[in-house]
Image 1 (spheres, helix red, strand yellow):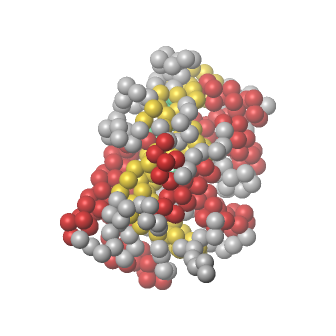
Image 2 (image 1 turned 90 degrees about the horizontal axis):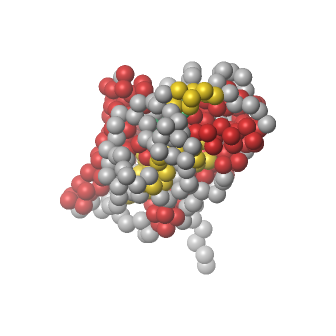
Image 3 (image 1 turned 60 degrees about the horizontal axis):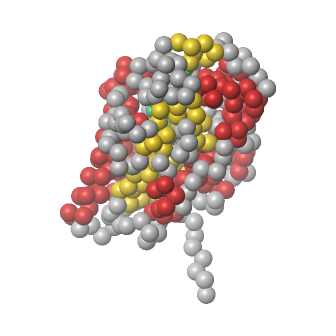
Length: 353
Ligand code: NAD
Ligand code: WQD
């Protein structure tokens, strides 16, 4: 007789944020039980209300900081957590240069506390939000997981440090011959954009957006005057920077594949492995602006300005490993990403306000 396996309970740190809220929808719809912890430093509870609206199921939410060991321990005592997806973190590159201690404290120390509490509770399956920003500059613009790491700002270094810590934890389990070793997936995201097809949840940056897509969307909706295109003298076909934009729903589906694999024998006990989550195809800044105009029928004013410090000319993923080992690949195309961004932005011109 076939054994019916109960779905696992997932703790989602940073679950009220942009990517976390989309993960909450997909996890619920895939039948997982879910608990969210977020300190709301860069999000609002309204995102979780919208998640409930989409799924028709209540969200269990704890407002807490992952650095608060007592609060986190309490959650692990109350909830029988099986796996953690760890999105909680600060992510603004410019802010990280101005406030490095904040970034190391929040991101690195926060992850240390989280892993200590997890280990004490015997929960050793972790999916971590890493970033393509961990890679160093390379002569080949298509990045594979084995490329050398070399982040160039405190935000990126916080992600690399966390990856190192997580690899060390796995190695320590082997040395100590523990019975239930860590199983860790380091998911290196390229450029997440887009929104849930309902238009109820999406990216709601504080103040002026740093990233291209939310900036374009806010120009199209009339909140901002024009996009500044940072440089048109790069060695790319139209001179503007090329990136691998990935739909946020595709991205979070990669997390569901990761938790499935971590929970199976296909992922070796004691392993800590990186996976690129990208489409494998890049688009230039001007191609993004043109796609936005074509799909939405809106004009997106722009002007060419100087390069932004620290930007690469071209960066896109080799996503083959995620396909081979997680059985995941991005399904949505550029028009889907633009249409869903616009659906969210035009229905929520002030974000969740
Ligand atoms: P986000 O800011 O929308 O979400 C992060 C969430 O974590 C927020 O809700 C915030 O309130 C919460 N948080 C931050 N510090 C916390 C703490 N100490 N305790 C509890 N909650 C805390 O960002 P996002 O775009 O959803 O990114 C999620 C993760 O993915 C981050 O770790 C980010 O570094 C990583 N990432 C994002 C991108 C991107 O372009 N969006 C790319 C690569 C990696
Ligand atoms: C994309 C392209 C810009 C804004 C950043 C972080 C990275 C990761 C994802 C978290 C580049 C150009 C941008 C604008 C522009 N986040 N641009 N005008 O820089 O690839 O990555 O977000 O991990 O760590 O660094 O993304 O959206 O900022 O830029 O011309 O107003 O658009 O120069 O070529 P980036 P982005």
